[in-house]
Each structure stands twice: as C-alpha cells, then as structure tokens.
Amino acid sequence: MGLKQSLHNFKVKHQDKKWLPAFSALFTFLYTPNETTHGGTHIKAADDLKRTMNTVIIALVPCLIFGIFNAGYQHYLALGEIEASNGFLGSTFWTLDNFWLGALTVLPLVVVSYGVGLAVEFVFAIIKGHEVEEGYLVTGMLVPLIVPVDIPLWMLAVAVIFGVVIGKEVFGGTGMNILNPALTIRAFLFFAYPTWMSGDKVWVHGAVERAGTPDAISGETLLGAYAQNSTLAGIDYWDMFWGLIPGSVGETSKFLIVIGALFLIFSKIGSWRIILSTIIGALVMGLIFNGVVDAGWISNTSKFYGLMSVPFWQHLIIGSILFGAVYMATDPVTASQTNKGKWIYGFLIGFISIMIRVFNPAYPEGVFLAILLMNVFAPTIDHYVVQGNVKRRLKRLKVKTA
Image (cartoon, rainbow, N blue to C red; front, top):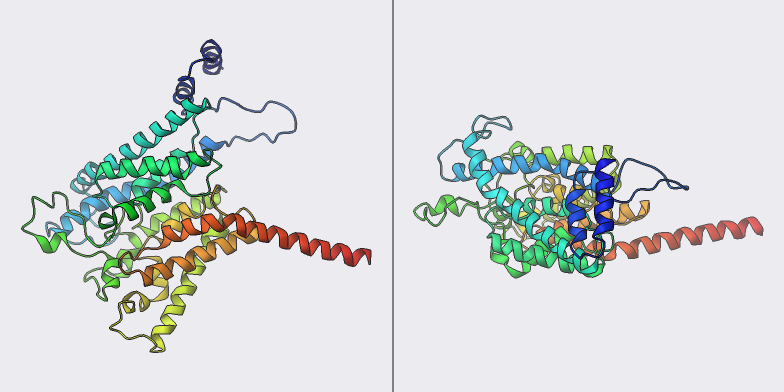
C-alpha cells in the first residue's frame, strides 16, 4: 500500500506533467497496475496484461539461452575448432566459450530491441498523454529471436522503430493493431535489407578478419541447402530437433519450443487450436508436395525439387514453422477470436507457410509472411464464422416457430 499511495500522491501533484506516464511505467514495471477494479460485477483475477506478457517472456527465455550457446557453438564448429556435439547434452555445446561468444553477439540484439522499442512507446505515451502500454514486453523479446545473429544493430534499430510505429501505434496502440509488431519488424528487414535476411549463411564471428576460411564462413543453413537441392553433411534429424543447427537465434531448438508451447497452453495464454491447426496445415501442404514428387510430375533438376522432396514431417524441424505457430500465430490481438476461426486461421498459416517455403527458394522461410497475411484476414474469418452461427440459429428458430 505504501508504494501505491506514494504513486497516487505523486501523480496528483504532477498530473499536468507530460512525462508522468513514463514515470508511472517505470514505477510499476514489476508491481501491480495503476488501475484495478474494486467493486461492481467485474471478474476479479490475479492476471493482467503485464503478467500475461511476463508469462510469455518466461516461455521464451529457454529459447534465448539456447540461442546464445548455439551462436557460439556454430561459430567454433564452422571454423573447425571443436567437434560436433554428441546430442543435446554434448560436452562441446554447453561450454563457457560458446556462451560468452554467443552472449557477446545475442545480448546486444536484446538491448537494442528493448531500448529502441520502449523509447518509442514512451514517446507516444508522452505525446498522447496516456499510460505506457506493456504490449512491447513480448515483442522486445521476440525480435532478437527471429533475426539472424549477425544483423547490424543499426538495421535492427531502424526496423524496430518502423515496426512499433507502423505496426502498432498508428492503429491506436496495444490491443488495436491488426499486424503482429514483431513480424512487421522482420518483414521490414526482409524487404529493406534482403541480403541480410536470406538465411543462407552460417554466421562466424569476425568473418572479415577470417577471410582466409571462406568455406567455413559461407556454409549453408538447412533451408538454404534444401532450396539448392543439396544436403548438409553431419546433421541428422535429432540435431534438427534438439536445435544443434544454424538458424535465427530462437528458432532452432524444436524441443524447447514444444516445452514453451505446453507451458503457454497450460497457463491458458496460447491457443492450442491455433498451434495444432498450424501444424496440420503445414503437414497437409508437405504431403501434397511429396505426392507431386512421387507422381513424377516434377523433375529432380527443378529449382523447386529440393524442398518439395523433403519428407512432409521434416518441414516441422528444419525451419521456423514451430516457433511461428507457438509464439507468433497465437498472438491474441492479431489472431482469430472465434474457436472455429482459430482452426481455419491456423490451418491456412501452416498451409501457406510451406507453399512460400517451396516456391520462393531465394527466401525459403515463409511462416512469418504467412502469419502477417492471415493477420489481415483474421477479422474476415471471424466475421463469416459469426454470420454462419447467426444463420444456423435463425434456421433453428424458424423450425421451432413453424
């Protein structure tokens, strides 16, 4: 009560100050929100927007920690300075050398993401005179996990400003946006700086200084290799599942993503309908492409053959489809709201993701573009689902009154 009373007194004293929303946000960052219900018929619960955001962040932390180790591991592995790790608990993966090198590269991405994004939030809160919204707490963690580890920090800063302003603030702020801000940021990077987002290189720290080892530096990632009708030696299916592969910071460990999905479903924050339907949609599209290859309708010299011939289930462990399904597609603001709509929404995300992955070899990862597309159509899906329910009820009413 002392903290709340102090904040209340301070707000009353300085209620005409433009910087007051920024102060309130800092003061209540780890405490209860400024406004709570005390009476009436409101449902009283311990959860609020800030706690919901923090729960999602908790589910993302394991992916972040693993991504830090993996960044260092991929660096030393590409240079041939260590041997490939023998499984998830291999002695060459969980080392301090891997951690420190990964932290040196990944943590600046987190700092820039939160620093720039929250600065934009504070500016808009001061200009509009409202409380700072907590919606960027999750976005700030997602952004470093969905970009290449070697992306220049200035590019990330520019993209974050664009994503927060265009993806959220122009729509009215948290809860009003129709596009996922984190995906808007990634889409901006993809279209503005495509050579940095192609995903066809293995990152090596200090590549300029190590120009004498071009083979180690220019090694392909999994999707890049399949898109070129080639394979990566030394990487098996378990490596793909555990995450011992190159890729964006948080997308590689499917094991930790599944753990995060179960945590979000159990806490009733993530929609299991969207997650499951996205996976089903991806598997169906993969099966269709496998059928085309098995029927001999496409030549093995075609530029589409590589990813078309990938076993349908393997699509789930070689790219970002699982990460997108769990942490992006389930965004409660931009996803479908009706139960039936969630099934349709998720299925189309998975279906379109694999389609983009196969037909766009230059950028063989389509889940983020697919989610953005379905963000736009989510209100339309819900509209037709609701109208269908209304029509069915009217028919039942006519039958009863006839």
